[in-house]
Amino acid sequence: MHFPEDFVEEVRSRNDIVSVISSVVALKKKGGRYFGVCPFHNEKTPSFSVSGENQLYYCFGCGAGGNVVTFVMQYENFSFQEAITYLAERAGMEVPEDTASAAAKKEEDKRKQLLAVYRDAAAFYYYQLRSPVGKAALSYFERRGLTEETIKKFGLGYAPRSGSPLYAYLKKKGYSDELLDQSKLLKIDSRGAWDRFFNRAMFPIMDIHKRVIAFGGRVMGEGEPKYLNSPESDIFDKSRNLYALYLAKSSRRPYFLLCEGYMDVISLHQAGFDCAVASLGTSFTSGHASLLKRYNKDVIITYDSDAAGVRAALRAIPILKEAGIPVKVLDMSPHKDPDEFINALGAEEYQKRIDNAVNAFFFECDVAWKAVDKRDPEQVSGFQKDLAAKIASFEDALTRDNYIDACSRRYFVKKQALAERVNFIGGRKMPEQDLLSEERRLSANRKKQQKDKKSESYLITWLSRTKLPFETIDRYLKPEYFENELYSRVAADILRGKDEHDPVSLSRLIDTYSAENEEYGKQLSRLFMAEIDEDDKIAAENLRMIKRDYLNSLLNNNPGPQELQRLIKERAELDKEEICLRP
Image 1 (cartoon, rainbow, N blue to C red):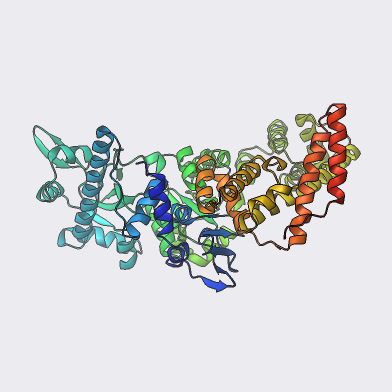
Image 2 (spheres, helix red, strand yellow; image 1 turned 180 degrees about the vertical axis):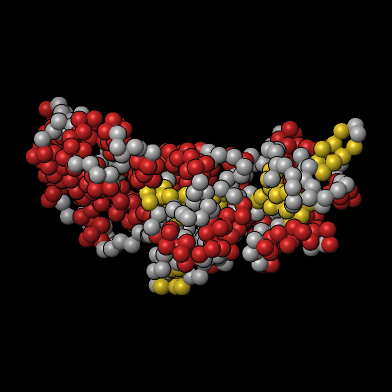
């Protein structure tokens, strides 16, 4: 659905950001802003700031920031369209009619109907668990140590043994055979209709918005397969959904616990580890990794400790690394899985295992080392060469050195020999003295660049706040003075608004640039919410510095004789000029 810009702006203006955020975050006013504990990362000291004046928020701890629409998108994991619809309904506004094609509308209607079918099916299974026919399944959950609260929290249920009771129930609800067949909860043909799940303890699978989209079922007693999952459908893609993510996404813990099974996740949540998730009857995929990446958290793999679980962890690690997610692996020995571990040793011991989880690099190496016959020099040498190759893959020299030191002790290899092999593989022939000089040079350049950029970031924040008229600012500042392309474009937008006496909406700017690049929106949120000293003398000095840097860059571009003379003269005049920002 595409919303007119005027409608989007009205939605923003009718949803005060302080009111929206305070409904989920406890805010306290300090000066002109509100502060609270960030809902997007784990912290004790509030660094989450909300500005009612600018209708923006920013966390100085994790960098999350934006306007009221961005907040709803991040907190609820909504799309832009879903966030606008939610806020419009919150403000009592009528959402414009969808201008999508007839085919798109038909597809969306079908999706809504399927979600309704699954919602009603979940209610049916939930009721059956508490009826006389569900006694065995209820006993099963209780034997596994689940409380009534947990059973309710996860919506657990039971699919009866015989007949087609779900079909009969859904038909009474008025659903057509065609829709029920498309739901894949039933098998319908010329001979009749059969429930896909029967005599099974049922686990509803919900999407990120807590909508039931599929089921997992464990057979009660004998029968194959032991676990049966819903096939993929128009509302269920197993490679892009994770069990219990709708709960885990709101956890304050800075990591996800990645499990293999439903019961593992449920047991961990009941024990207080509300960050546990699991893939749905399939291997971990890049789609799963992309889903987790949204939440800026690490991942601790807590798969089964048997050989199959180890292989699954080894497959998941490179996928998570490719997505840029830091990975560790938890050791559950002597127990097989989290459910068994929690029931045997309790939550406190499990937390200790989390605290001591090994990083993915060492896990992979430990698995390989265990497979080596330590009496065979060839196998040992082969492992050590592979180890050196893994260390050589690190770009940073300091990181390589740290791993060389740690691995030499962990795997009983001489440090010097390992270092030489790593450098040989990486083709690094630079002497140690030259390496040190190069690092110092790069460090000095980084510090200089950081110093140069401070004036640019300061002036973007200052521009977003200052009440000075366009004519005053335009004398000393032009968009092209900014070396940073984003800053230059934003400065042009703000100055254009001042020139036309129609101040630009900072909230709208964030939306505009976020649509182009999510990182742009985060950068602007940080700049617009930054605390700066707005004293005229400080602003004037930063204006002088940015123009001087601009003139220097032009001088470094080998201008012609006349242009060179003009630039030198302009720079000399700038150094002498008194920049006056007030009449």
